[in-house]
Length: 340
Image 1: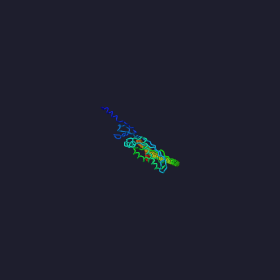
Image 2 (image 1 turned 30 degrees about the horizontal axis):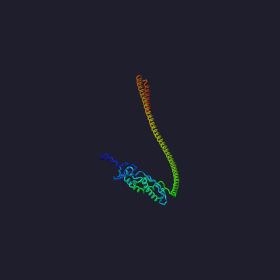
Image 3 (image 1 turned 90 degrees about the vertical axis):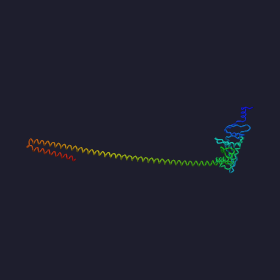
Image 4 (image 1 turned 180 degrees about the vertical axis):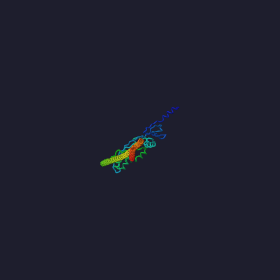
Protein backbone atom coordinates (compact mmCIF):
# COMPACT_ATOMS: atom_id res chain seq x y z
CA UNK A 1 0.00 0.00 0.00
CA UNK A 2 1.45 3.41 -1.07
CA UNK A 3 0.79 6.51 1.02
CA UNK A 4 0.28 10.04 -0.33
CA UNK A 5 3.80 11.04 0.69
CA UNK A 6 5.31 8.14 -1.19
CA UNK A 7 3.26 8.99 -4.29
CA UNK A 8 4.59 12.59 -4.23
CA UNK A 9 8.17 11.41 -3.91
CA UNK A 10 7.69 9.08 -6.83
CA UNK A 11 6.23 11.89 -8.96
CA UNK A 12 9.11 14.26 -8.23
CA UNK A 13 11.69 11.68 -9.02
CA UNK A 14 10.34 11.26 -12.59
CA UNK A 15 11.79 14.54 -14.03
CA UNK A 16 14.86 16.77 -13.89
CA UNK A 17 15.08 20.55 -13.46
CA UNK A 18 17.25 22.24 -16.08
CA UNK A 19 18.34 25.91 -16.21
CA UNK A 20 19.30 28.21 -19.07
CA UNK A 21 21.68 31.22 -18.87
CA UNK A 22 20.69 34.57 -20.45
CA UNK A 23 23.02 33.90 -23.42
CA UNK A 24 21.76 30.42 -24.24
CA UNK A 25 18.51 28.76 -25.22
CA UNK A 26 17.41 25.34 -23.96
CA UNK A 27 15.01 23.56 -26.32
CA UNK A 28 12.88 20.98 -24.54
CA UNK A 29 11.18 18.46 -26.85
CA UNK A 30 8.87 15.56 -26.02
CA UNK A 31 5.32 14.50 -25.33
CA UNK A 32 4.43 18.06 -24.25
CA UNK A 33 5.69 19.56 -27.52
CA UNK A 34 8.61 21.94 -28.04
CA UNK A 35 9.52 24.63 -25.53
CA UNK A 36 12.28 27.26 -25.57
CA UNK A 37 13.77 28.44 -22.27
CA UNK A 38 16.10 31.49 -22.19
CA UNK A 39 17.41 32.76 -18.88
CA UNK A 40 15.08 30.55 -16.85
CA UNK A 41 14.38 26.96 -15.82
CA UNK A 42 12.14 24.09 -16.89
CA UNK A 43 11.27 20.50 -15.98
CA UNK A 44 12.25 17.62 -18.29
CA UNK A 45 10.53 14.26 -17.79
CA UNK A 46 12.55 11.13 -18.09
CA UNK A 47 12.27 9.01 -21.17
CA UNK A 48 9.50 11.05 -22.77
CA UNK A 49 11.37 14.42 -23.10
CA UNK A 50 14.84 15.56 -24.12
CA UNK A 51 16.66 18.90 -24.17
CA UNK A 52 19.51 20.53 -26.12
CA UNK A 53 21.27 23.89 -25.95
CA UNK A 54 21.90 26.66 -28.48
CA UNK A 55 24.33 29.46 -27.62
CA UNK A 56 22.97 32.95 -28.31
CA UNK A 57 26.16 34.98 -27.83
CA UNK A 58 28.18 36.52 -30.66
CA UNK A 59 30.34 34.35 -32.89
CA UNK A 60 33.41 36.07 -34.32
CA UNK A 61 34.44 34.64 -37.68
CA UNK A 62 37.66 35.35 -39.57
CA UNK A 63 36.83 34.96 -43.25
CA UNK A 64 39.58 34.77 -45.85
CA UNK A 65 39.12 34.43 -49.60
CA UNK A 66 42.45 33.29 -51.14
CA UNK A 67 43.19 33.79 -54.82
CA UNK A 68 39.73 35.16 -55.50
CA UNK A 69 39.35 36.46 -59.03
CA UNK A 70 38.13 40.05 -59.54
CA UNK A 71 36.08 41.41 -62.42
CA UNK A 72 39.21 41.99 -64.55
CA UNK A 73 40.85 38.66 -63.75
CA UNK A 74 43.29 39.90 -61.11
CA UNK A 75 43.57 37.40 -58.27
CA UNK A 76 43.60 38.80 -54.77
CA UNK A 77 43.34 37.60 -51.19
CA UNK A 78 40.80 39.36 -48.99
CA UNK A 79 40.39 38.96 -45.23
CA UNK A 80 37.45 40.12 -43.17
CA UNK A 81 35.89 39.80 -39.73
CA UNK A 82 32.19 39.07 -39.16
CA UNK A 83 30.10 39.12 -35.98
CA UNK A 84 27.13 36.72 -36.18
CA UNK A 85 24.51 35.55 -33.69
CA UNK A 86 21.27 33.61 -33.53
CA UNK A 87 18.26 35.89 -33.90
CA UNK A 88 16.70 35.89 -30.45
CA UNK A 89 15.06 39.32 -30.42
CA UNK A 90 16.03 42.96 -30.03
CA UNK A 91 17.07 42.73 -26.37
CA UNK A 92 13.69 43.83 -25.06
CA UNK A 93 11.50 41.02 -26.39
CA UNK A 94 12.56 37.42 -27.14
CA UNK A 95 11.66 36.10 -30.60
CA UNK A 96 11.12 32.40 -29.87
CA UNK A 97 10.18 31.62 -33.48
CA UNK A 98 13.65 32.69 -34.71
CA UNK A 99 15.29 30.55 -32.04
CA UNK A 100 13.16 27.56 -33.12
CA UNK A 101 14.19 28.22 -36.76
CA UNK A 102 17.88 28.06 -35.83
CA UNK A 103 17.16 24.94 -33.80
CA UNK A 104 15.74 23.14 -36.84
CA UNK A 105 19.12 23.58 -38.59
CA UNK A 106 21.71 23.35 -35.83
CA UNK A 107 20.19 21.75 -32.73
CA UNK A 108 22.48 19.04 -31.39
CA UNK A 109 25.52 20.28 -33.36
CA UNK A 110 28.70 21.48 -31.75
CA UNK A 111 29.62 25.15 -31.70
CA UNK A 112 32.52 24.54 -34.12
CA UNK A 113 30.17 22.86 -36.59
CA UNK A 114 27.77 25.78 -36.48
CA UNK A 115 30.61 28.27 -37.00
CA UNK A 116 31.94 26.24 -39.93
CA UNK A 117 28.54 26.21 -41.68
CA UNK A 118 28.09 29.97 -41.25
CA UNK A 119 31.72 30.56 -42.27
CA UNK A 120 31.23 28.69 -45.55
CA UNK A 121 28.16 30.75 -46.33
CA UNK A 122 29.96 34.02 -45.60
CA UNK A 123 33.08 33.08 -47.58
CA UNK A 124 31.01 32.04 -50.61
CA UNK A 125 29.17 35.36 -50.75
CA UNK A 126 32.37 37.29 -50.11
CA UNK A 127 34.09 35.56 -53.06
CA UNK A 128 31.02 36.17 -55.20
CA UNK A 129 31.07 39.93 -54.58
CA UNK A 130 34.84 40.07 -55.26
CA UNK A 131 34.16 38.68 -58.74
CA UNK A 132 31.89 41.64 -59.57
CA UNK A 133 34.37 44.39 -58.66
CA UNK A 134 37.75 45.61 -59.85
CA UNK A 135 40.81 45.86 -57.64
CA UNK A 136 40.58 49.64 -57.77
CA UNK A 137 36.99 49.55 -56.53
CA UNK A 138 37.91 47.19 -53.69
CA UNK A 139 40.94 49.26 -52.77
CA UNK A 140 39.20 52.63 -52.78
CA UNK A 141 35.76 51.79 -51.38
CA UNK A 142 35.77 48.99 -48.84
CA UNK A 143 32.56 50.29 -47.23
CA UNK A 144 30.64 49.78 -50.47
CA UNK A 145 32.07 46.25 -50.78
CA UNK A 146 30.98 45.46 -47.20
CA UNK A 147 27.45 46.70 -47.91
CA UNK A 148 27.15 44.49 -51.02
CA UNK A 149 28.35 41.42 -49.08
CA UNK A 150 25.83 42.15 -46.35
CA UNK A 151 23.01 42.54 -48.88
CA UNK A 152 23.79 39.13 -50.39
CA UNK A 153 24.37 37.18 -47.17
CA UNK A 154 21.52 38.55 -45.05
CA UNK A 155 18.71 36.52 -46.71
CA UNK A 156 20.66 33.25 -46.33
CA UNK A 157 21.53 33.94 -42.71
CA UNK A 158 17.94 34.87 -41.92
CA UNK A 159 16.77 31.58 -43.42
CA UNK A 160 19.17 29.81 -41.07
CA UNK A 161 17.95 31.78 -38.04
CA UNK A 162 21.08 33.97 -37.82
CA UNK A 163 21.76 37.66 -38.25
CA UNK A 164 24.91 39.51 -39.35
CA UNK A 165 25.73 42.04 -36.64
CA UNK A 166 28.85 43.49 -38.26
CA UNK A 167 31.16 42.88 -41.21
CA UNK A 168 34.52 44.59 -41.77
CA UNK A 169 37.24 44.12 -44.40
CA UNK A 170 40.61 43.86 -42.65
CA UNK A 171 43.08 43.23 -45.47
CA UNK A 172 43.32 43.17 -49.27
CA UNK A 173 46.47 41.74 -50.91
CA UNK A 174 47.76 39.95 -54.02
CA UNK A 175 50.85 37.98 -55.03
CA UNK A 176 51.63 39.93 -58.21
CA UNK A 177 52.16 43.30 -56.47
CA UNK A 178 49.17 44.87 -58.23
CA UNK A 179 47.77 46.38 -55.06
CA UNK A 180 51.25 47.53 -53.99
CA UNK A 181 51.68 49.32 -57.31
CA UNK A 182 48.16 50.70 -57.00
CA UNK A 183 49.04 51.88 -53.53
CA UNK A 184 52.22 53.50 -54.79
CA UNK A 185 50.27 55.22 -57.56
CA UNK A 186 47.65 56.27 -55.09
CA UNK A 187 50.32 57.45 -52.69
CA UNK A 188 52.00 59.49 -55.41
CA UNK A 189 48.63 60.89 -56.42
CA UNK A 190 47.82 61.70 -52.84
CA UNK A 191 51.23 63.35 -52.37
CA UNK A 192 50.74 65.34 -55.57
CA UNK A 193 47.26 66.36 -54.48
CA UNK A 194 48.63 67.17 -51.04
CA UNK A 195 51.34 69.38 -52.55
CA UNK A 196 48.80 70.99 -54.83
CA UNK A 197 46.44 71.41 -51.93
CA UNK A 198 49.23 72.82 -49.79
CA UNK A 199 50.23 75.29 -52.50
CA UNK A 200 46.60 76.17 -53.09
CA UNK A 201 45.98 76.61 -49.37
CA UNK A 202 49.10 78.72 -48.99
CA UNK A 203 48.02 80.83 -51.97
CA UNK A 204 44.55 81.17 -50.53
CA UNK A 205 46.06 81.99 -47.15
CA UNK A 206 48.19 84.74 -48.70
CA UNK A 207 45.16 86.04 -50.55
CA UNK A 208 43.11 85.96 -47.36
CA UNK A 209 45.90 87.71 -45.42
CA UNK A 210 46.29 90.37 -48.11
CA UNK A 211 42.53 90.80 -48.25
CA UNK A 212 42.37 91.02 -44.48
CA UNK A 213 45.15 93.65 -44.43
CA UNK A 214 43.43 95.63 -47.17
CA UNK A 215 40.13 95.42 -45.32
CA UNK A 216 41.91 96.45 -42.11
CA UNK A 217 43.47 99.45 -43.85
CA UNK A 218 40.14 100.38 -45.39
CA UNK A 219 38.46 100.00 -42.03
CA UNK A 220 41.17 102.12 -40.39
CA UNK A 221 40.78 104.84 -43.07
CA UNK A 222 37.01 104.70 -42.66
CA UNK A 223 37.40 104.96 -38.90
CA UNK A 224 39.74 107.96 -39.26
CA UNK A 225 37.39 109.62 -41.74
CA UNK A 226 34.42 108.96 -39.47
CA UNK A 227 36.40 110.30 -36.51
CA UNK A 228 37.36 113.43 -38.48
CA UNK A 229 33.76 113.92 -39.57
CA UNK A 230 32.58 113.53 -35.99
CA UNK A 231 35.27 115.99 -34.82
CA UNK A 232 34.23 118.54 -37.49
CA UNK A 233 30.59 118.04 -36.64
CA UNK A 234 31.37 118.54 -32.97
CA UNK A 235 33.42 121.69 -33.72
CA UNK A 236 30.62 123.06 -35.93
CA UNK A 237 28.08 122.22 -33.25
CA UNK A 238 30.23 123.90 -30.62
CA UNK A 239 30.69 127.01 -32.80
CA UNK A 240 26.95 127.12 -33.45
CA UNK A 241 26.31 126.79 -29.76
CA UNK A 242 28.76 129.62 -29.00
CA UNK A 243 27.11 131.78 -31.69
CA UNK A 244 23.67 131.13 -30.23
CA UNK A 245 25.00 131.89 -26.76
CA UNK A 246 26.57 135.17 -27.88
CA UNK A 247 23.40 136.16 -29.74
CA UNK A 248 21.36 135.41 -26.66
CA UNK A 249 23.83 137.33 -24.50
CA UNK A 250 23.68 140.28 -26.90
CA UNK A 251 19.90 140.11 -26.89
CA UNK A 252 19.88 140.02 -23.11
CA UNK A 253 22.36 142.94 -23.00
CA UNK A 254 20.20 144.90 -25.43
CA UNK A 255 17.19 144.34 -23.23
CA UNK A 256 19.23 145.36 -20.20
CA UNK A 257 20.48 148.52 -21.97
CA UNK A 258 16.98 149.41 -23.09
CA UNK A 259 15.66 148.85 -19.61
CA UNK A 260 18.54 150.88 -18.18
CA UNK A 261 17.98 153.72 -20.68
CA UNK A 262 14.28 153.69 -19.93
CA UNK A 263 15.00 153.74 -16.25
CA UNK A 264 17.52 156.58 -16.60
CA UNK A 265 15.12 158.56 -18.83
CA UNK A 266 12.32 158.01 -16.35
CA UNK A 267 14.65 159.21 -13.57
CA UNK A 268 15.60 162.32 -15.54
CA UNK A 269 11.98 163.05 -16.36
CA UNK A 270 10.95 162.53 -12.78
CA UNK A 271 13.84 164.76 -11.63
CA UNK A 272 12.79 167.51 -14.05
CA UNK A 273 9.21 167.25 -12.87
CA UNK A 274 10.29 167.48 -9.26
CA UNK A 275 12.57 170.41 -10.06
CA UNK A 276 9.68 172.17 -11.78
CA UNK A 277 7.55 171.58 -8.75
CA UNK A 278 10.31 172.98 -6.52
CA UNK A 279 10.76 176.06 -8.73
CA UNK A 280 7.01 176.53 -8.83
CA UNK A 281 6.81 176.36 -5.09
CA UNK A 282 9.74 178.74 -4.78
CA UNK A 283 8.13 181.16 -7.24
CA UNK A 284 4.79 180.98 -5.51
CA UNK A 285 6.55 181.59 -2.23
CA UNK A 286 8.21 184.68 -3.71
CA UNK A 287 4.85 185.86 -5.07
CA UNK A 288 3.28 185.34 -1.69
CA UNK A 289 6.17 187.18 -0.08
CA UNK A 290 5.72 190.04 -2.57
CA UNK A 291 1.98 190.13 -1.82
CA UNK A 292 2.71 190.18 1.88
CA UNK A 293 5.21 192.99 1.37
CA UNK A 294 2.62 194.81 -0.72
CA UNK A 295 0.03 194.40 2.00
CA UNK A 296 2.51 195.59 4.57
CA UNK A 297 3.36 198.57 2.41
CA UNK A 298 -0.30 199.37 1.90
CA UNK A 299 -0.90 199.23 5.61
CA UNK A 300 2.15 201.32 6.15
CA UNK A 301 0.89 203.83 3.61
CA UNK A 302 -2.50 203.93 5.18
CA UNK A 303 -0.93 204.42 8.55
CA UNK A 304 1.42 207.08 7.21
CA UNK A 305 -1.48 208.67 5.43
CA UNK A 306 -3.39 208.66 8.59
CA UNK A 307 -0.46 210.40 10.32
CA UNK A 308 0.51 212.70 7.60
CA UNK A 309 -1.60 212.92 4.56
CA UNK A 310 0.22 215.64 2.92
CA UNK A 311 3.93 215.60 3.25
CA UNK A 312 4.60 211.97 2.85
CA UNK A 313 1.96 211.22 0.23
CA UNK A 314 4.35 211.35 -2.69
CA UNK A 315 6.87 209.16 -0.96
CA UNK A 316 4.30 206.61 -0.12
CA UNK A 317 3.12 206.49 -3.72
CA UNK A 318 6.68 205.89 -4.82
CA UNK A 319 7.07 203.05 -2.39
CA UNK A 320 3.82 201.61 -3.64
CA UNK A 321 5.01 201.71 -7.20
CA UNK A 322 8.27 200.01 -6.27
CA UNK A 323 6.43 197.28 -4.48
CA UNK A 324 4.11 196.81 -7.42
CA UNK A 325 7.13 196.55 -9.81
CA UNK A 326 8.73 193.89 -7.63
CA UNK A 327 5.49 191.94 -7.59
CA UNK A 328 5.14 192.07 -11.36
CA UNK A 329 8.79 191.07 -11.83
CA UNK A 330 8.31 188.16 -9.45
CA UNK A 331 5.21 186.95 -11.30
CA UNK A 332 7.00 187.24 -14.63
CA UNK A 333 9.92 185.20 -13.33
CA UNK A 334 7.58 182.56 -11.97
CA UNK A 335 5.72 182.33 -15.26
CA UNK A 336 8.95 181.95 -17.17
CA UNK A 337 10.07 179.11 -14.97
CA UNK A 338 6.70 177.42 -15.35
CA UNK A 339 7.12 177.55 -19.13
CA UNK A 340 10.44 175.75 -18.82
